[in-house]
Length: 125
Image 1 (cartoon, rainbow, N blue to C red):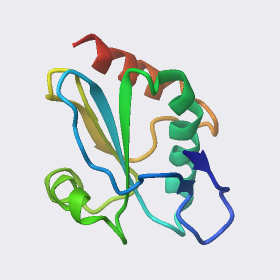
Image 2: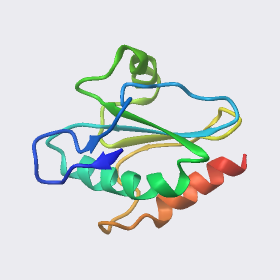
Image 3: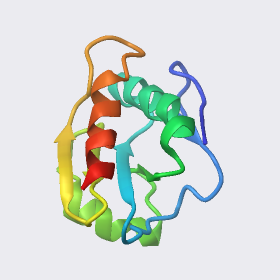
C-alpha cells in the first residue's frame, strides 16, 4: 500500500487487493473508511500508511473508499461507518472492536503516536 498525495482528487491510498475485507481470527485489524476530496481523510491516510510497514506483520489493513466499496466491504461499511470521514475501526485479536471513531487520531500532520498506541493495544488482546 502507498499514500498517493494529499492534493489530488483521487482516493489517497493505492495498493493491491484494496477490495479485501476479511477479518482474520487471532489477528488485529484496522479498517479505514475515507473518501477522495477530503483533507481529513488524506491526513489520516498518511498516518495509516506510515504505520503500515511497521505493523503489517501483526495487523491486517482494510481500506474502504466509502464512495466505491467492494461487495466484500459492504458489511463492514454498514456495521461500522456512520457517515463521517475519516472513520477508523480497530479490531483486537479476539475480534472485538477496540476502537471506533470518526475524525483524525492526531491534530498534527504526521503524528502517528496515538494511532500506534491504539494498534499496539489491539494486538495485546
